[in-house]
Length: 114
Length: 113
Image (cartoon, rainbow over all chains, first blue to last red; front, side):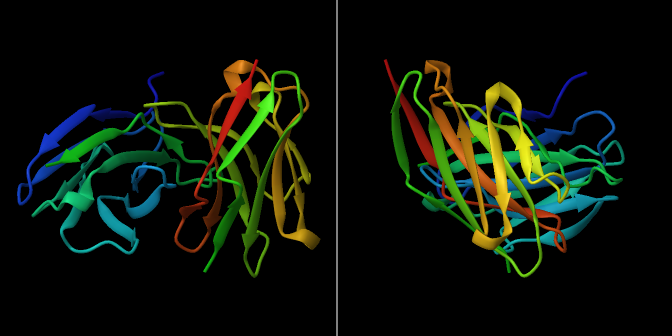
């Protein structure tokens, strides 16, 4: 059983560009959360998707948007990239049932904005 | 709103020594609490979780943590450190309303031979 997978592994963009990151959840999980981890810091919650809708959102600007597909996979889009968007972006999946509290993380996508 | 504080950004121990990583939480109700480990250039791996059952929680790789409501603490311990334990450790609490994890700033554990 594959765990949470993310693509690409690394990405380099320039300021002002747009980027799309992808995540496939663990089998049996229907909820996907995205986190941003800046260098030397703990992950920060961006938003969460369930039933193809954004269910919750952290303190991130509208430049950060997402999508969830019928197969539960998800995308994170960031527009008008800033240098400060350079970070490791982590995707986490969880089930919606009794074990909803346990989130499994993917390996992350390292985004560098030049 | 829930917050999680990790005391000590860096902890260094000798191989075979006790590991103690500190975490305090702030919440009006007993939360769900977690410890995650992150190895260089990797994602987060769950070590253990507290979900209001037993206050002493055992996890993988010989780690355990004790939930102390009176101290609002959830410290992580391991009796004997191994070189392979060198990594970044994050304490996190789950905001059950948002179903989102709130992380501490992390503690980097170094294990000296």
